[in-house]
Structures are given as C-alpha cells and as structure tokens.
Image 1 (cartoon, rainbow, N blue to C red):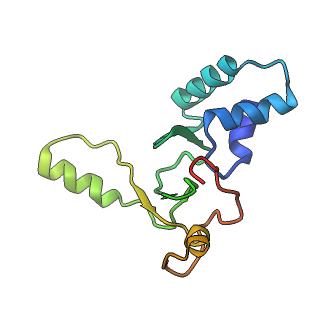
Image 2 (tube, rainbow, N blue to C red):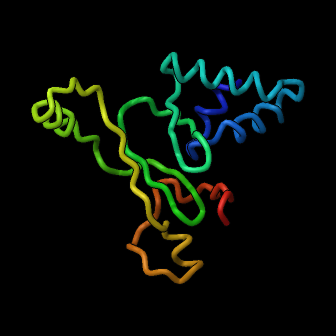
Length: 138
C-alpha cells in the first residue's frame, strides 16, 4: 500500500502525506510503519527520496531527473529538462572523483502563485500544475 501510494502520486509527497493516504485505507497502520517502509523502499531503489526544505519527499520516478520547487507554495514537480550526464563526466575529469550522479533543484515562483501574488513570472505551467500545492507555506 505504501509503494502504491507513492506511485500513484505525482506530487512528490512527504512521508506524512503518504502516511495519511495509507491510513485512510488502513486505519490501524502506524506512522512508524509507514516511515520505516518508505526508508526501506528508498534503500531498495523502489522510490527516490528527495531532500527538500521542510520535509523529505518521495518520488515514484527512479531515473535521474531534475525538479522544480515553488518557494511560495512549496509544490515540487519534475523539471522538463533532460538529465545532463556530461556534467558527471566533466566533474570526474576535473576532480578525479568517480561521480555516480548529481541532483539539481530549480527554485522559483510557480505560475499559479505568481498570478495570485501578482509577481511577474514566465509564461507556462509547472508540469504538475493540476496538483494542489502542499500548503506548507501558504
């Protein structure tokens, strides 16, 4: 149920959000069980853990990719930019480190929040624009 909850959400949910989703279907499940299993699923490579301001998030997409985070509503979505493997190679050549990968998160104000707050923003929508913001900062 925990893995299913992560896979069905494209909103990069926090452990607490996953717990609440799973608990709505299985009221007797404990928060500790959900958190332990999320950690195990992450270690097994079934889900990806994202270190984000405010709370860890979990992602069903396991391949390398980048993220966008709104600094107003704290929504997280996938960035529509291809992973740059050449950066890994360039850093390896410059430093001698054996780079296994890198993470990148773009931060800014999403179009929805920009419109609400009358902040100039680029045209377009977050790829996850249909999802509700997390409400952690609103």
